[in-house]
Image: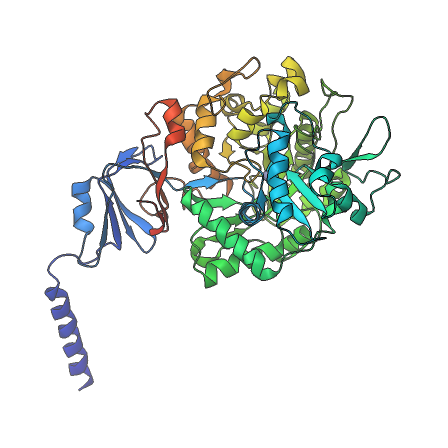
Length: 562
Ligand SMILES: [Zn+2]
């Protein structure tokens, strides 16, 4: 009886198969009629992609894709739109982007007065005594190019404490009320890794706080609730996907951020891939070294396997650590982490298979971190490492001597660079650095020619965080309005093929994911960015007019702008 039953079921199964005339294994979705750049040398161009279970099962012609279309297959007609592998931003402050959406966004203010007007508007709507915080101003766009002062802010906010962070996050201006809450007086000493700018005549604080000095005031700003942070994250993720990013590397944060990200991925089915990199040295780094990396949870969308170190400040606020003095001030910048605290953390990270990503902008910071990496590589030989090639990174690598550029390749260190920084900074970099040092500034071609790959990013919200701005900056090396100037080194611009790799396959390598993503190939995740124009052939200036039409992550449409 039992055997008969099994035979009967088998017969029914066969009958069921026979009833479907066409496909044994149809795709979930097929994208057809596209102008596809695969970033795969085996098959550089294609028209169609079939997806099943979140992965690519076919790449080829529209006619060839027909064989994958069954009755349940979703067919998406691309109408000739350009498709590239899902873009990745290798240096992105996801929470910062979300918070910029909910707080006061000071991007694009062109004069001190327009900046103050925007702040006043917010102050007038804020209850007496409550804090006003914001981010995004850049004084180098103003005339004169001078930092704002507490007196400027006192004019529009005598009572509410105000703290406004420069776009780069390395400096903030506070008004007198905020300085008072924080207890900053004439006699207050500069903290390690920071500076309280003072009036040269009176010695009083000007309101400008550089790097670690910002913390003296910031710790008095009331924190956000978990629900408010979750809201900010939701807005940040939405904005990120709508711009065409399919993955971001978070460049700093905490375990609390990790929990928030995982909740968004699990409960809200957020579709952005997040490669999270908590800060170190300190508690987060120690915990990660102790507990080990988390790789590819939440359908491959969440990974935490790196530690972000911040070794110096930024060039704009003269915090970048230089080997020789700034050309326009009597300082060499500052270190924001102590090598003796970084050293043991590097050993632990190397033994336990963690990546280290160190922010180093000035040539001195770059040399110090390469020295520290080299020392750690010698102290922990490959056989004592959980991962033999740790793929450690230097974030920014903005001003680097020729001999240190060569050491990146020698040590197999990845340069993680942000093209938009160059086209913003080159307006003031010549006065900060002088012509000679500019030869090694934002030196993309020097890195590529020496055999080092570049993981491209935007550093949003330090910059706008838009992929087309980054792609344009990388290939044009001109300002958004087409300006260039002496010392801009146009020969350091990259080709469009190289720029595309900077935001696809090289970030995938920098995240140990080159077998999973970064190109459009069978077996990889179906992560795609669909664009309104062919960025590989259009006029340079038209790149900036190009829009993201659709963002696809793991075969699912995460943003649809059609
Ligand atoms: Zn950053």
